[in-house]
Image: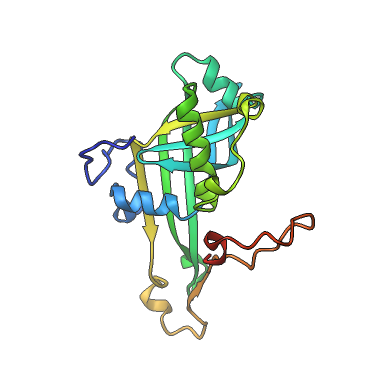
Amino acid sequence: MAPSQESPTYRSTDRTVPTRARERASHDRALVHAILDETSVCHLGFVRDGAPVVLPTLYGRVGDVLYVHGSTGSRPLRMAGQADPGLEVCLTVTHVDGLVLARSAFHHSINYRSVVVHGTARQVTDPEEKRTALDALVDHVIPGRSSDSRPANARELAATAVLRLDLDEVSAKVRTGGPDDDPEDLALPHWTGVVPLVRGHGVPVPADDMDPSVVLPPYLSSL
């Protein structure tokens, strides 16, 4: 679904250029994809009955397209299906990599990597694209899992709605490094530096009712 000759950067718009710390912003396509691919939970924002709503949800990426899914009865999915132009959304993903402790309370911060996507989400109605999207959602959480599980049947597909959001108006923002104290505070006797935050996988725990002859697949043992 990605263009055959894609630009190395996404286009810059008024909504994708931050008003603060512009030097931390980037429209680099590879950076955006790397940030999106490292986690599987996003926050999806939209307007419902005149008020803002933000929902955490899983997502998957296929090229320059993001997919989110949910029940066919959920409000945002119904809104995207009923509205002719689709549903205007803002989708965000954030990694917190470290706690930045400065000498002054004012300059405390975090090291982070984030992506913000603006656009119009639309329901996926094509059966083939829907299956591709659902496989992408499963594999985005655990790569290789979609081929090692029963695919959705017709009843489950009918009960599941999928939204498509094209990566067109998108930007990344990154902060790295240590604290940025004022010169007059450098002599203060307070510990200063960065506390790294590390995300990882634990040892898989088999279900109580699993056949003991089923071995742990390589895609899980290698996590």
